[in-house]
Length: 95
Image (cartoon, rainbow, N blue to C red):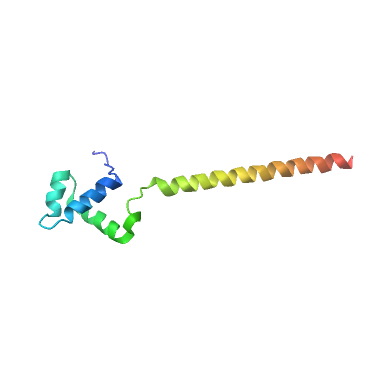
């Protein structure tokens, strides 16, 4: 079984630019770059729909979410520790 190939955003943009030139077909570009011409079509659609935000990759949103969850986790730990200290303070004050 073939391993799935990953292409950089720059490679995708260059492939779309080459395919957009007059007198060149997607099949020719696909053969030259050793990729399926349907991929070029899909990349063109993505660039048209998303413009400069096309090809951001899969890890960006996940990394941002992970960082956000870590910040929230730290905040909640600080709140918990503060409440523990406050409870201990007031419990010792009553005796």
